Image (cartoon, rainbow, N blue to C red; front, side):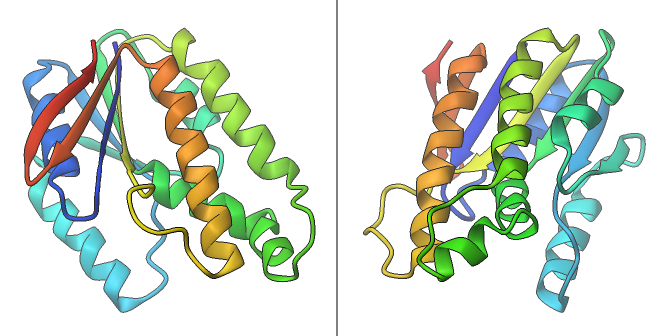
Length: 182
């Protein structure tokens, strides 16, 4: 089963995903996409680590998510990906799409296009259970800054494509899950 958990910032989506992984009865591998580049992110990562059971495996992959999922997925495993939002941000900056948006240029980012296509192609083929966490960023105003607009547009597109590839989609708001698909 492939499942997408979406919600706003601090909505409880990661905690809900962790609860699902724990209840799966499978061995769990937590696949982190964040990079601890500053003190705030270091604290956020530490908070997530403290919350996870000691017997869960942990892997990190900031860019090549589909390849890492192919490596980790197994029939007896639940892989929890937290989160697609940070992964997308990593791709936008590593692939120069953010710099192109800042400069007012047309966006041509093979890294972004290739990695998102690889994820969508790979998801249905993976064995075991995959739980993906992502932010829903499209409910606010359209951002003024070009990089922020690019991010919001790409996040919306990514969430739509991942949701279509998943068996179940759950929206979490105020810690409460609402099934949107499945």
